[in-house]
Length: 98
Image (cartoon, rainbow, N blue to C red; front, side, top):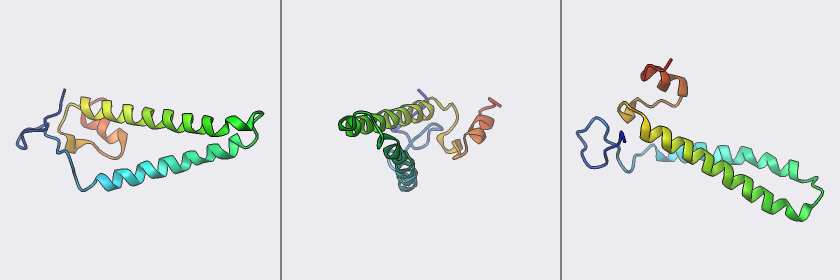
């Protein structure tokens, strides 16, 4: 793993909390809000009694997918975590993948 939680002087040090956390939570909230468009699609189901269950399952699948991909990318990023950019292509250029 390319993560160190205990030594602040290490290149791969990651603090457990940072002030930019709230920016991330805002982006996550926006992503989940956009997925509310699914509700309009489920309004015309053959079996409307299953709509709530289907929407909850869809939200959970999307949430777990985003968290899994973000966690794997963050943990396996080979450079200092401060090099991770909001734009994925900049992160790929930083590690020489592009």
